[in-house]
Length: 608
Image (cartoon, rainbow, N blue to C red; front, side, top):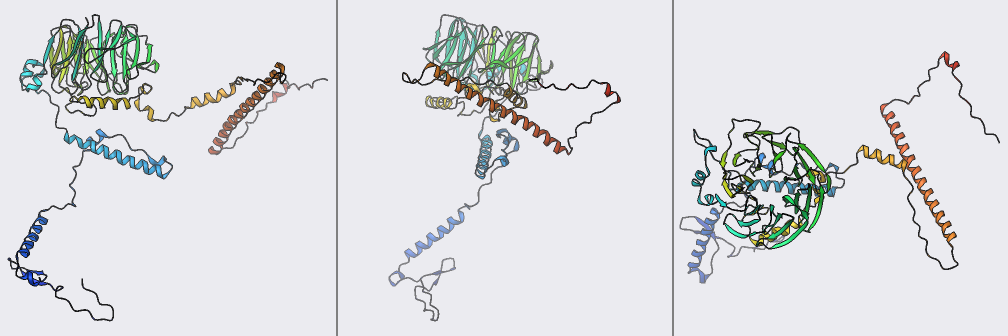
């Protein structure tokens, strides 16, 4: 470094190593360079090598992109953002302190970021839902299962199969992730297996009538409604438990987020069993008689039960009266189902009609009506909104619950048709697969219905390819996030509101103050030594305490009454002041004939 000369002195002369010497390069350009020492002047290798490194660095610097420029994000359509939105932002004007206002603002920023990230994940969803498209002069209803299986890939064609079984009629259930299948025959046959790989988990005969079967929260446990009681079995067919409080059960359903096994028996009793603690959280008589049609609403957990009078009643385990009733058919009901989103209720009756109802508004008019030749004995809705219904051995599927074939349009043909070999007793769409499972009197059939299943699944919610370790972790998380049965209501967002008393409740509370009775006083005097107090003295003290308490209660009631009267009087004065009118007593209209009216009697003074 060169030293700067202080004020008043001359600048020092420059030294030899401070002066830069220009060196010409091979290209003829002059670059400044420091002079070298004597023993380095004759050696040029190091100098040339350093020069080449500088050139390479310069080349690399030119090639390196500008890091400061951030890549532009693709704009997300507003429709996709609305799909993943969590609702409107909270109005922070009602928040009092600045700390909580800032906290609420940060929370809204986090929610907006989460919504944006969830909307951007749609770019990663590679699978798209498909559907059959017919050529000119053809309709999709003419295609048979053999033709569909011959024109799809081998993996999809393997999902079309049939099982001939001898202990029917059968009922069937898929697991929540759609990987495992459970079959139960009326004559005692029970089988559980992985229907994709065709690996059998267990198969046995309980040697008595089987009314229904149902998977529990994990694919290693399931419940079987036998002749008398409900039994729990594991994946290998070992009996785990016998629930004797659930007797003569006809239908079962499982609420996965509440860990509740709902059951309806032949005596009309609806029961809810918490499988995590093994206790009944609800068990009462619905008064509907034999329960044959029962489904739960996945959106709010309410149990929908169809009766013989065409009425669907909705029940909660903590309310002994139905939350709502809906008259669906003038005749007895034959089938009932709720779509996986919990928006629509589909019912079928002996009037040969299939009706679609809006569960969010519960209107008295259906959204769509399907006119059939015969009454439908089974109805089912897929994840993509396809409707399947069976009429004996004849099966039909429609592309949409609301638009295809509804509102009585007979010219609208179904999406697919299928003739089964026996009477259909059970029907379910497989989750995340384009498969419709049918249980008949002679066994089970797996039909291919392109476009019925959701192609993309959330692995944290339902993972068809989960390992045993992932299954255990998912079970623990589900138990920690279990929803209590008290929150099962028609409106699941009701808990987010404030329970403010209504005007009628306030009026009733004020009226009760005028009819209160003094509380009962239980006085237990302490035991004294002999001669210190007798029974007469104890009774007198007890009466004194009671009189004091009664006087205090009377004075409090009088004070409360005065406050109520004063508040009402104040409200009346305020109302008069706000209206700008003075209170004027009405003048008494006098007449000439008033002298003929009897005069009011004067109060006589009491004689001594």
